[in-house]
Image 1: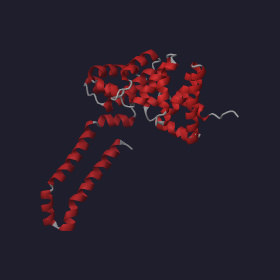
Image 2: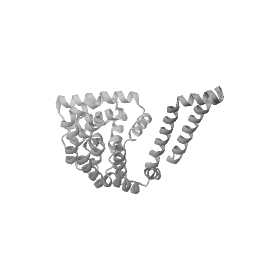
Image 3: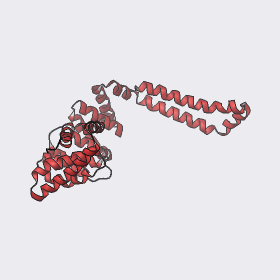
Image 4: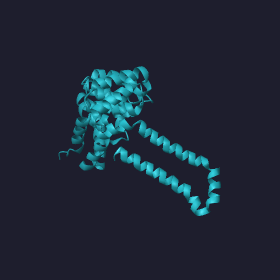
Length: 275
């Protein structure tokens, strides 16, 4: 739905709702009682006006942003957000996420790095909150050593949103660095995650790349964990249901980056076992 339509419809709903509340006493109780009622309950009217004015002020203040998002003009959107963030210092999470996402669509890694440096200097708490997004972006540069160095300070921190995914990215980065067994403890923990996609990807890495690097009993143990999760997910998901589950996960840009890995995990998960 277009932002203009949302803006108009919400105003109509608010005005209609208050008009109904305001005039109902006149129809039911008469003019005299109604005037006395509103004289005593004027804060309700003031609250409505505050809500209406706040809503409209928010839309007017961000109108340019909404129009750029609606028009999918990623170049203009990135330029506007870059000026707001790095030029004017309007650091807020909504702008940060939009800028990173639009920069990823344009493969503008330099822009993301500039924002990361600014946040590290001026708003480190905001950088920590979205460390998953910045860490995933670094994977696109094919520099796993730099990705590991970025992710490591944010591990197991309570102020990081989607911390399990950050732990997964760290383990995956260790695999890319040819140190798969170092990532095993984190992947074992993530297999038990309530996030189906996260647990499935973790099981796939344990049963493939990590198991192939292990030997003896350790290898058998990793395969046991991975195959148990595989069997569990195969009971719950048909190929169509798994496809829907992965597409739902891809609403997050940092998961879209893992599309190839997700496809490989799906093929492993849904493979027909030899009889």
